[in-house]
Length: 283
Image (cartoon, rainbow, N blue to C red):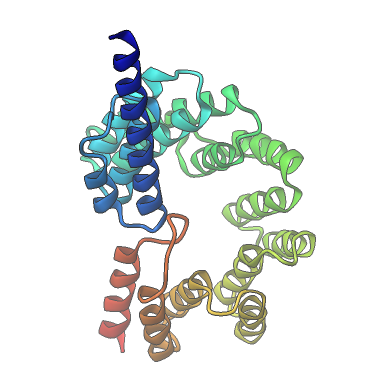
């Protein structure tokens, strides 16, 4: 009898794991609704399941539900830096989208979670980057500040030199030290010449400063590094729309983007659709 029960339990665990893997695969293909649906019938009372459901809801823009499931994930594994970091992200989005009365509280929770995630794992680069962004953008009364951002930028550089220069560029730009910011972005690209993201950072900043000819050359370099890259399509289109030029080309790029196979690391389709509508209205 006991052997039969153990066998059934083992099979149910395997089925649950298979269901979780299917849901994770759907998440990675940005089919977040299908990912949630595939979890029906699976044992969702685990940290991994709560974590995936929280990310699904986050990507769908349902930040309250995201934070609720990520809270459960953290409760199941309080020392998991990744879970805590994502909970901070959810509260950060709630701060951005909630009424002014609630926003400061959510922002403070986001900061606390980012700080805790970094404390739990000092090598969690994504958490470090989000904490840097928080300190850079948030006012002092919410725990932000350039000095705090500077300290985190130095820690980022210890983990990833190119990312450290990118952080220094953001700080310099905030301080209106535009030449220094550009220099830092060039240094970041020099240190990671095969990383298309570093190339796009410089291309976008050059356009922002009105250096359109060099910006176009750097965009071309990014395209050569990663042909038919959705990331390149989006960055170039967004730059054109922000600068109110090449709007027809921006529309073509966004249409290509929307027909591309995206990942959760790419900007969401809703954001691309919003930019496309904006470009069409400005044409």
